[in-house]
Image (tube, rainbow, N blue to C red):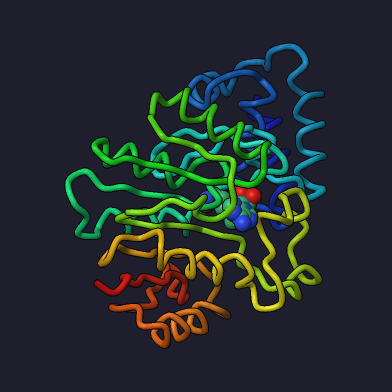
Length: 272
Ligand SMILES: C[S@@+](CC[C@H](N)C(=O)[O-])C[C@H]1O[C@@H](n2cnc3c(N)ncnc32)[C@H](O)[C@@H]1O
């Protein structure tokens, strides 16, 4: 199998993709775990491996996302199922979860994750705050079904609602969301991988605030006084919404950076 691995690494590298993905693709093609693959690398591959690997490599080299081929992604230590059309949870959203966990929340907080996709944020918060009442909304039925499946597989109790924005909820301690936030103009320059994700999960009008802005407005009723709003946005629009919230009287409005140093997160408190 060493030859298959080396050839796959070389082809990925030549296409500008991480050569480490060859391990994932070979594991999937051979039906072996990464560990068994490593231990058996000098053995002949199981029957059919080479043909399956060729098929997988072909799709990957044409821009199909690795996570959709694998059907799984790790988010904040949780294995989550993903499928084409549902947003692949991103590492920067783990930063949003970290910010949420650092908030001074009450012992049994009421939390709502808006636009939950695979359930990533809601499930990570429930895993780390087992006493919390965690709700999540989603408008896309395919994503909602996947989020429910992820919750069931992980044994985490999150209440998923098929509804837009805050679903009329009230008394929340935390309203958290990674909404669609890319400006429409980005569609023209987006990397090919994004074509396999749902545009509903990515684009949000000219400024990229077509979901986040009404969500923040609803937050003025959905949050309890002093409750937190925490959003992931784009460096191009996070300051714009932060300024609008300041003008509307929100308190402790702050723009925070992701690990790459980009202005990415918006944190604010509903006035008491
Ligand atoms: C950027 S994705 C985030 C998915 C997930 N929270 C994550 O971080 O991986 C945005 C999600 O919001 C959903 N969405 C779009 N508009 C919405 C709305 N008005 N209300 C609720 N969800 C919405 C999309 O279907 C998509 O799943």
